[in-house]
Length: 226
Image (cartoon, rainbow, N blue to C red; front, side):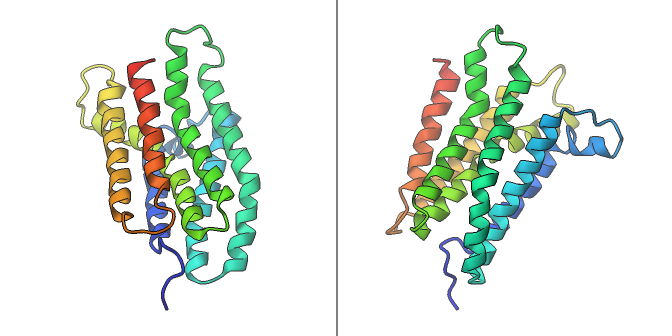
């Protein structure tokens, strides 16, 4: 029986994203529960919980489509109306926790842009998914964009963890060159691959080029510090 979704392997990719996030935040968050050094703000735990819920949603929903459990898919989709605003609140709280006491720091605007650009992509993807929820092709791509928006925070930390373990740093790491640049290149490569694979699709193929355009604008603003 042919799959009813244009992305039958989406659950596997999102499972990989789940593992990427675990790996990226393992030294700075998860491992601290094992060595009993965890002393995080409630904001951290709230954000981690919302992130895990969202990833589980991205993994389960394509499986329900493949198994033709459409009623369950729609029911679980309605829970996103609760998870989405809570996820947004958790992200804003984390940004506030990082800079709430440093409102006079130099280059604060550019720093906030760097932290919030993926939040903007995440919100855009969800708005697309909900606005076009009756179009399976567009809806699926919008939800995929919400997953793509979660790649950078985990991947940059994973690069820093790897380079630190390899002792490539003499002093403190240069976050931009060792983490941000390779992450940007990988995300852009991913978007280009998706666009190429989608070139013959009749519906929904505008979503990924649109997202790539947003990334180009946001990264340009961040790098040039306009």
